[in-house]
Every structure is written in structure tokens, then in C-alpha cells.
Image 1 (cartoon, rainbow, N blue to C red):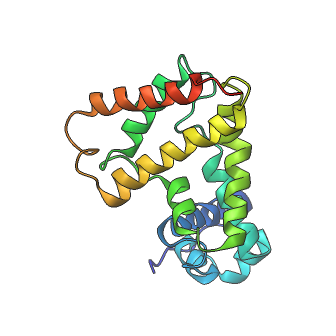
Image 2: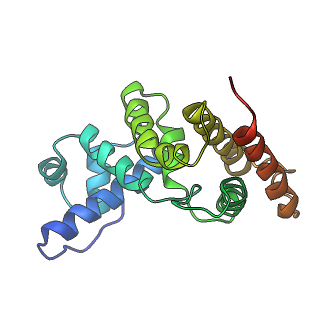
Image 3: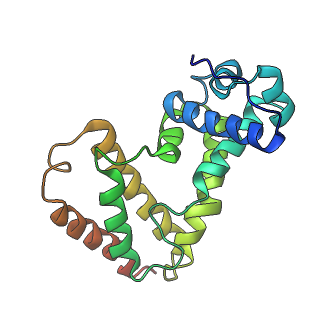
Length: 192
């Protein structure tokens, strides 16, 4: 547990430090794998202060998830071409040397806790799911969205967690091309 120097009193800065610590720690160990004391220590505050700001570990987790899932990562707000842009973003952001993917890791490492899964699912639906669904055709807009998100999650698991050799090979252009074709098929397949 890193020892941080005391910070000047500033509620907004303290709250942000706690939230950033929570995102880092939930991404590292999941909901059940980290306690409020550990998050507090990493933020340079006491567990009592964390509870004063957030009320409970569950509410802290919900705010951490909300903060982590809100920014567009794989699905842009107004892409030029949904399939192409999502494929390119997925290849770039899932590369072994890419930055940490906190939202994905929070989801993956918290999957054993039913309440944490519910919080994550609601955040996905509210953010990336809604952003993606509004760009997809009917019928089956929500189904198409969930299938695209499932492909994204699968690629993240295989590239970043498992380290599948073919997915982490040198020819990322082929990977992007193949993913674009998969996304196009999901988007364009007629549904009754």
C-alpha cells in the first residue's frame, strides 16, 4: 500500500482521488477482491472518509463504474462508419501494449458478484449500448448492439487476457479487416 503525503483539504480533489483509486483497484481485483480500506489507503485518505463521500462500497463501485464506462472507447458518438471505426478502435485499444482498459477489467474481474454485474450491465446499457444501438438498424437494434459488444468483449479476452497468438500477430490490418466484416454482418443481416 503506497504511502501518500497528506493532501490539502479540497473536497472535489479528495473525491476525485478516491474515485480514481476505486477505478484502479476494482480494475485490478474486481468488486470482491478489494476493500474500502485498500482504496482509501491508495487514495491517501481514511476508510471513514471514503464512506462519508460515497456512503458504501457498493455506491463507490457504482460511481466508479459510471465514471469508467461513460467515455466513448470503442463506439464513437458519431462515427464515419460504425463497423470500420469500431474495428479500428478495437484493434488499437486491445493491443497488448495499449493502455489499461479499466472498464473491461472491472467488468471481467467483478463477474462473480451478482450485484456488481447488475451495476456493470446497467452502465453498459446506459453508455456504450445506447450509443451503439442508436446507430444500428431496426429490427433487432438492441440485439445487434449486444452481439457487437459480445464480439468486442471476446476479442478483449482473447487478446489481452489469454494472449492468443494469431490475434496478437504483426498483421493488425488483417485483424481490423476481419472484425469490420464481422461487424458489418451483424449490422446488415436482415432480421425478421
